[in-house]
Image 1: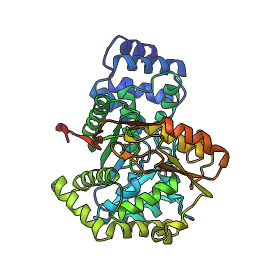
Image 2 (image 1 turned 90 degrees about the vertical axis):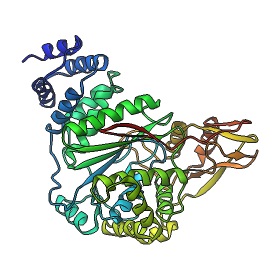
Image 3 (image 1 turned 180 degrees about the vertical axis):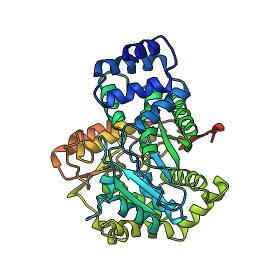
Length: 441
């Protein structure tokens, strides 16, 4: 088998066999196939695409390129949740304890974030002493006892995917749906999940800017799951404006706690309940999403979800007092309001730009070496469709570096559009994608 023949076959629109895909991925992972040939193959895929079967075979080849987490010692059906990213996306901190409080085991491998704000681990490290450095034995034991654990991705999962992604990043082949879908699903499958719920974002603050592309990506990932024996459901959700009001690590933790107390923002609560309900159904705890949602709403109302979160924080070395006394979380030296320049209705809150404003304050990292300031960020006071008066605060900046205030204020105002017209707020949940097809919400 020759690499050049595989490249030519895909370039000409042919369908690769499972053996050809395995040969390619194994050879690349072992440095037997050079970057320039893999770049040529990735470009051929970009233009020619892949069939559902090819995409599933590519996913499995990347899974088999490294370690696979064995969660068989955890009792019950393990359902993982993944988000394609966004601004103010703190759903894991809500969904994980919420679903665990309903008796569904949540065994989550998470990472640190590059970009606007930190990842799930960075956010959780807002609790003094919190650690995700769990051994496999500790991880399994904690999930069996508490139904919830979050560990760092220390295992050598999908090394071929890491190599391929780095190559795609510098060869303009990142936005290929088969390559995106196989990259995401390979990590979820290698992580040991029995079933997967995906939160696929669409909008200006998402990777998939339009809803049609988001649905195509969701269909590809659900198809992979079906072919490899992992039941998968995808929720298409809006990311034209930040999710919730908080953007920043400790600020998002506070908002997650508010939501677990039943008084969180409507959009964040709605998305968390939707994702959680599908996880509960895939775990076999209920027969319908409606029944699952009712169960989870009860867990929010009776305090079970918040109690589970507190138990989880304490089990992993964090200060549980900060769940009830959020002023124990990192705080800033100064808060600065950003006033509205005119009367009107909020027509647009550019999610990506607002995320970059938070990053400029120190809430995120541009490189892996950058240090995050857990305290800083932005709290919005208005959402799209809200009426605002001139001089009224649109947002509050939480800052520790005074030199950044003016630039961030100006940048944030550029991300806000105010109109005299009536604006209808966007729907948070757009559609649900399952093996049966696409269901509009």
